[in-house]
Amino acid sequence: MTALKYSRQRESIKSFLLSRYDHPTADTIYMNVRKEFPNISLGTVYRNLALLTDMGKIIKITTEGADRFDAHVEPHSHFICRECHAVLDIHMKNEDFINTEAQKEFSGQIEGHTVRYFGLCKDCLSKKA
Amino acid sequence: MTALKYSRQRESIKSFLLSRYDHPTADTIYMNVRKEFPNISLGTVYRNLALLTDMGKIIKITTEGADRFDAHVEPHSHFICRECHAVLDIHMKNEDFINTEAQKEFSGQIEGHTVRYFGLCKDCLSKKA
DNA sequence: ATAAGAAATAGTAATCATTATTATTATCAA
DNA sequence: TTGATAATAATAATGATTACTATTTCTTAT
Image 1 (cartoon, rainbow over the protein chains, first blue to last red):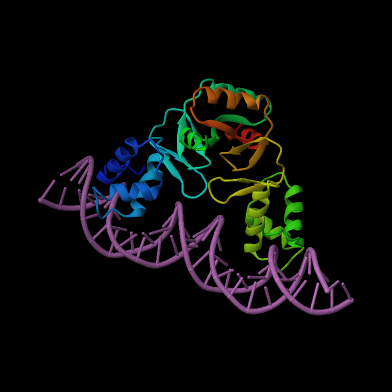
Image 2: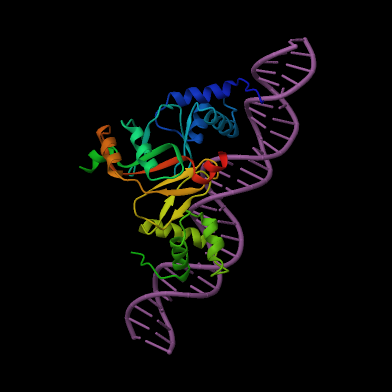
């Protein structure tokens, strides 16, 4: 019904997200898109992130504190370092196995899943050694 | 250093949580513990939930909207219904498989994981039929 | 049992992330 | 070019959570 109308701000948000692999928050996105659109408002950032999420163009990652966003939508999981709190990607094989196994134990219909790993990232690991 | 001191409010929060399997929010806990302690404040509920989480006595589940809490700490996963938003438990076999497979693709050290499933719960599924 | 010291509380204010409101501007189709 | 309406900037409002503070409760040593 409500036809989507082009906006330069939305394009900028999307292309910024495509350039990043560290899953920035709405506020980080706001700070960066401001370089191109100095008067953009935080509300515009939030509204467009919600729009893009609904359209499946980006993924919203709900964690402690502020939500994070990712324009790389191919299935993958996230690792969160307990030391530096970096959010890193993990492309695991056999992702389907997880749904299949869980479905055996569950009476509803499982349509998907997200896995979140925690531990120490490579950098923090080497600092400990 | 700071010695933990007994409190009846904290015990009440813990035992309420042990009686429930639906992962209530801080506000729901507050409403229920008020039956025993009419003057308890929401801040007390939050502070004790944080304490219990730090002690590993309960688990905090960060989802869209308010956080949810679970006093049943044996390893298990959660299913969130996309229709009614119920949070249900799934006890999956082969949980270790997930860490092992992911570790093959990751250079840091994976210490654990959480899986969140989504789809339709049994009740919402039958309403659709 | 009692008093001193420290942690916990109730009540409230403050913060943070996010959403809603509104007058103005930008996009699009005729 | 114009008219309709989606999108915007600026700002207010909301919801969840945390911080603050004077008072109360718990603990431990007397």
